[in-house]
Image (cartoon, rainbow, N blue to C red):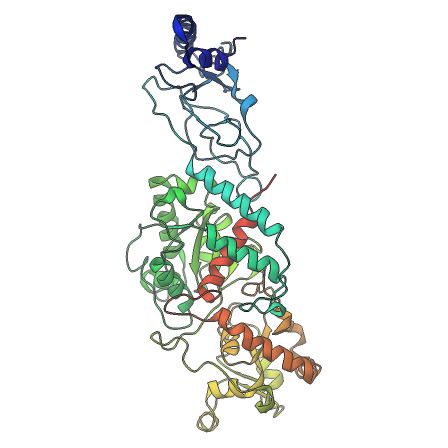
Length: 540
């Protein structure tokens, strides 16, 4: 077989001369004859492409500008491979799949590392439950007949670069150096502070997010900053204002944000009294379908590099009419219940539910008393809905002075000590689930330096992939509610002081700021999305 690279290199090298031009003419003639035969055979039947070959360009260009042609005619099962060198012989191990493309005539660019050629790869094939596959060249199954029109020389795809960056970040995090002391991070709060610090640093250095401009208002791009569902609104506001992570060019993005509001969907689309979420689900289905039809980015990973942020209790259920949205997309939701088969631990993200009373001052009244000035053992007051709260009330209402458990805080008690003052004066703040597993009381307890006691089976706690919740909270199984006081009294005074100190140090990670601050709630949420996405990028 003729070595075309060497032949063409001789033709364009210094002092090529007439002999080189003769070689070049002969090679062009062979390529044209083979191409003509292939096109003639292309009108008969369908064929799978088995390999790619490099042939000389049809112009007086540099040797780097080889074009790719299929090894067999795309429409005939018996045509022989075109003359040339199989592209697979020059592929480096670092190549990763890039964007969807019809590889009819594609001009590759040389790899800066080894001079290899990287083609536009075919669509990504799932390697697991809808996730990005292991990096490597994916063979093309079937392709459309090649276009005879001239094709401009493309470059290495931006999506290939973003994939390589994610792989690099994952390897760097795996080799994170040990952190002995960091003035901004308190190690006892974390499962592995060294891994978190390296991951956060890589996020700051690498991560880019594209926000779709599509979507009607107020369903999209309309954050609400108050109430118990304020988390989704604050994240949307701060994300859309961000200049560090957000990019206008989607080809440079590692993640894609679907900026809709589950709270607005409930307000605008739910038919009162219908008990049906279908109108909300239909909107989401159509919204994602329109994005996947208009842009190529969803289809590259079937939505695995896209994320939504939604705090309403219904958020997980309204994804059911779009299979890829439900299974593949990173769902950042307050209702992080693994028992229902929608929220996937390790892929989806548990969103901290924050009750913001005054949007102009989301940090108002935070802080609490030291452990020595907390006279109440445990406190809860709230509406009686869901399966857990009625059991809590039945066992502990008016049974024990140390256990201040109320359905609604009585007026005569509230006149002397408000709800917030109760939390600031209690050692433990009881945080039982309501209709769903999530509760804003967890973050409220953290705001007021009260150790949260979480009662919600199957609940994935916020930032559980990096935080050690046993260092600053107590998780009680629903079946152990009758033993609640015994469990709390079993915590020694020394351990309690340590836990309460940890809560105070933890608080900054759960705060909203008008302008995001390093390691605050906005950045912690974004880090969890980044971290979980990296967990599903496969490294060879």
